[in-house]
Length: 606
Ligand SMILES: Cc1cc2nc3c(=O)[nH]c(=O)nc-3n(C[C@H](O)[C@H](O)[C@H](O)COP(=O)(O)OP(=O)(O)OC[C@H]3O[C@@H](n4cnc5c(N)ncnc54)[C@H](O)[C@@H]3O)c2cc1C
Image (cartoon, rainbow, N blue to C red; front, side, top):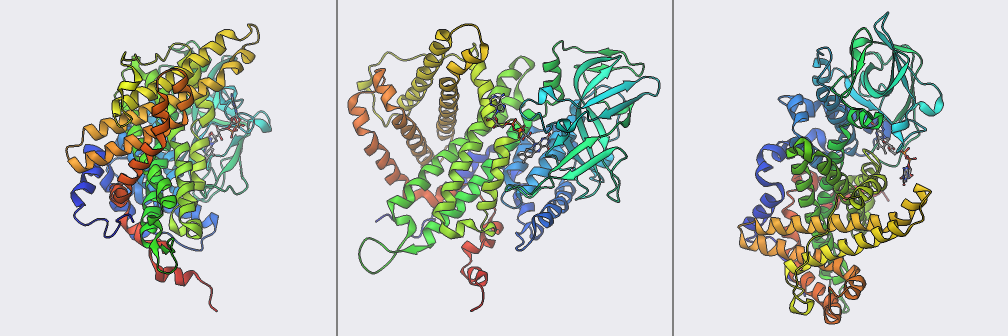
């Protein structure tokens, strides 16, 4: 039987080394402050609240975040700090994650990124006297938001814009514009019409209502039906000839307007102007990844801990064993740990690349952020679903920190760029020259061992190459003429290429983290995680790898046992690996699943 008791004896240095590997030098500066804040009493789970009460509570808590900040502007300007906040907020309050992300990143970030035009006093937003919202999506234009139809017509005589929703399909869809949480101001994406010409989509600063909850004249806000995701005051919002001052336009190089109505832009294409206007959506993708990772690590910490404390029958009559003693129970959890470590390191790479990108590197960094966001938020869904199930019915209670966060993760999959759509875009770019398969070594496959991490990385690159070739061949072979038909011929293998790319990069990031860890035991465990993660992927594509001569038949036969051996080696370390996540102790200990007496309290009286 697997030795799991007591799992953490003498392991503190390993746990500390794993935590350091996961959070790096920024552990103390970027992560600890949020761990401390969210461990305090106001962030404890409250049973019995309605969705509306939960939404209101999220805004109260947003004020506590804001009070903890020296400078909201500095937070917004530093994507590494901003995404770190997202990594810790989800386990305590998923809705708080949503409203914080919108206020700081989409709203304040947009204001700060638009550096031209008249000076603006941001005091009421940085002190949260008014909460910021971001209105881009329209009922008729979600992923096609580039075609949005709200207009802002400039009138140089009065030096005002007239913001207008031309028809119901142009109403702004989803943003949290209700009076819940106090007065709000939006940045509204609308077509700038100046001198009778459509200049493309720009952002307009628009107060939505006053301190008493009375909407600004001409602004109409209706609550949307309740969602199954984080409880947030999602609304549908429209504008009936709302007059805004000249200063409302957020200006930058990509669009400047003089008070007299003369328009200039450094960007020719309206599509690019739109993308520049909503540029905050790229850090937003990194924020969504951060949210997903935080809740995934927390869910795994809950599930692995539960697996070590909950007892069940063994294979012989009588007696009992911890759930974790069963291979059927610990294998999916160990796999989930490997995926989650890989996902965290992939995220670190994506954030670093975005933060340090020069202008010429920005396009690559944006694509990488999109690929990573899709991969991480989808993996989060899988891992949290596994955690929910491994906790049995306990996994369903909101108070246990898994089910609500899993539902809220659906929001990260759709918001800030729908995963499938941003992967389709990345796939197109990778096919059309923004990707070159890795060079291959000459050594024959039989000279390699499945335990060699470099061989495994080579195989992951081979999977990329296979799908790249397939997608290109289908694109080349497709009948000319209808561009959508041609793209449809190639998109399925092209999406496989994106997936293969994300897997290889995630595995590489995990391997690099192992190599960069000085502590021998932590390095050993990270290397094993890499091996398991890579073996699963290689096994799933072993047919292609064999057919192309990258693997031998003997390798393929050995794959299942190779993975079993790694699971064997990693299972005793599962608690250490999840302790390395440094999950919020106060929140963990507060979950009824970790407090048998609390579970008693959950039962109705006889
Ligand atoms: C929790 C949450 C919070 C949000 N907050 C905000 C906010 O603050 N501000 C805001 O402006 N918006 C917000 N949104 C809206 C969000 O931006 C949109 O939901 C998103 O852009 C997708 O649009 P849609 O829902 O209309 O889906 P659709 O565009 O209708 O897409 C539905 C599906 O169709 C497919 N599809 C669509 N277009 C294509 C295409 N071109 N190619 C291939 N397949 C396609 C995709 O599979 C997609 O999943 C929020 C959404 C959520 C879930």
